[in-house]
Length: 387
Image (tube, rainbow, N blue to C red):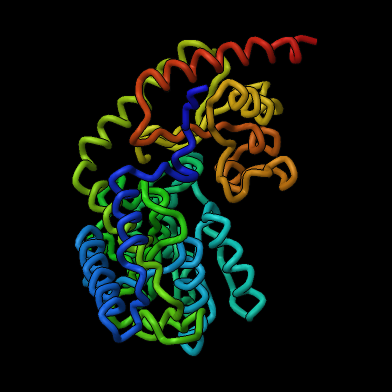
């Protein structure tokens, strides 16, 4: 069976060109970058070259970019590390109600350490009204964290406006950009963000590698203590093959971003037209305009309770889609997607959505086959709701 992969927001296939880079690194660059011999020196040189190339894509200084094990660590470090390091300035933090689980759970931990957290509501499209950030600020607010693109809806937040408001009150701003980096314009200076979390496996790179941009002058407490790598802020032996693969993946995305954005938007538009044409009861979650190309979240009115069954039947036909975030996929047990609840969906609707995320290797044929398979599956499910 030739499978059709439509879950690129969860993770992407590794691009063959990136895989070549990784394999070369594993076979020819096995030295520890902290070692003083030639193999170690070579590893360090390649790592710093990759850091510079990645910084170029993000439009920041290389010394402002710190490698991590992925987006989850980058987010944890940005939030916990900043809060602990700046506790003397205040203990209030503002985040949105639709952040990734790693951000929400980081703040649950911070609450246990005596910090106060304000969850900002979003509108029916999943977008924050910037003025609400201003209204939530108190004398003790030290940090605002709002994701750039939501991983379930694809909605784009007005982070530049939010950053400006935060800076008006001398408050640091962080954004989780794991779903936007490499897909839509993202430049450190232009966003106004003081910290930006990014990772590789959302951009056709390897898993287990990410980075945190920390603007010069921002102080963080390390989460990992050890040999003093990453300028003393993130100790562990560096993942050289992952770092080199990350830089290569970012460069490939950057070089073809506009063309790829247009191509994926075309495929997504084709899917929307097909769904609207074939199903009278389909409805969509998220903004129809202020969104990144490639992520489409939808459900079928009256059939939300069959979403998981639909996913399993699609999987049997060789098609991979999801019910939302891969990190919180057990919505039936958790009471539904916190993101869908935040935009006003009821508990049944919050458990009944399907997320299709289109990527570099998808074609028009994939979309057609998906829609045909979905039509067959919906017809099989209809009798369940006929009495």
